[in-house]
Image (cartoon, rainbow, N blue to C red; front, side, top):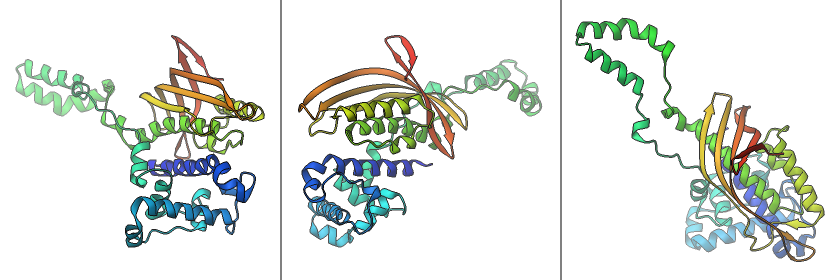
Length: 315
């Protein structure tokens, strides 16, 4: 699964989330109880009204002349295909949806949600063992012996004692970027699950978690309890936020990986019954993610939580 597919999944998540957050103020008067976009029929009036809202947001940002020049149009059926992931969206469709969500365009959305590759210090790019072998050859003072060593001996002996530097080019390749993106996406999906309360929807968790992951079960159980209590983080002005300050790949094979992160979680629950904030969590901690590649997509199967020098598994 490439980064572009993951970004499209995140764009769908934000679109569904925006509709739910604005349901009471924009849609409830005409359509009653909340209706999940992914379950609507193609003829549902909500899809057409949402398409008009997307078009209006695009026209407001770009102006009528540019919208007309670029032929930027969108229909309710196009939106339904997008949220159901039944058809690859065009660049124009992605641009219009991104603008509706508050971004300058699809490219701006992708740049914001794509992890930046850290710079590799120069001294860590050097394979010091190889430098040492070459230097030893020159210090021997025998050019013929040096040539003999590199031509006949080195190809046979060196692989048995190969040294893999901590930072190599492959560490920051495309597959590594998908790995870091999956870790970042897991936090965004968890906070979105809390924002959608009291509505329950665990389908998005399957994008990043394996079915047996204890953290997946913890999120499902927690949202069920909070939903029953009528708590949410989706109220207007809620300061809930999640951010990764640092991410480091500790180990990776073609099918498994371990990633260590430093994260800040600010979670503020709002009581819909009493109309006031009722619980606040504001902590910076470290976590270790254990991932497997399943059907060409990274999935988290275990999370180890580290806090105040103590390490324990998240239940």
